[in-house]
Length: 277
Image (cartoon, rainbow, N blue to C red; front, side, top):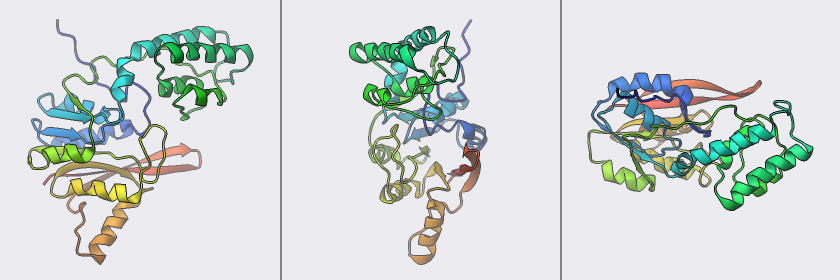
């Protein structure tokens, strides 16, 4: 009997900026698009949007631009699971969600150091098990400076079939766009890093110019575009349309929003804009 393919509702590994909260609205909006089209995920991130499209439209061609090399983390998931299993054993008698100190801290760091020197460490995933919520590091040197907490995951990660049937590439989004821009049966998934952010899990620092460059892929194309109210990009495009001869790439599109809470007194609004031409 053929085993049913698992549909993921979130990234199989921790990833900042994944669109799991938007999946319900994203799936609903996909009904307006062709089930046999080519979907090009220009800023692939964790691949969750690509996975979702392929799960709903198995006959679609889905191209995932893995510019941040998320595949490396997926390919080494067994090593990550083994490391977390060992950390779980080290901390089995230690209080949950408490600061890790003394010899326990030494043991945890020594175990991670061994893999760092002899193999591979997915520091983003490991961070989610021994650092305060939403805090990540990318190196052992950075980890040594942090306060550690016992929030070790109690089960293994599983990414079986996550990218099955999806074409994975790694290139500049502009080059990838140029390959498909003249294909009328292409839908672009456009989820760039947030404006003026310097996140350790992204490559580089995104400025206003970078954001405006991305808008060029929206002219005359079918697209899903993700941003937030922090960027003010929608207001900027409205201003450009009224003050200059340029058009607004969001004209004729549909907008969906999702409120995201960061702390008890702060948050922001995620925005999904989509259009069929």
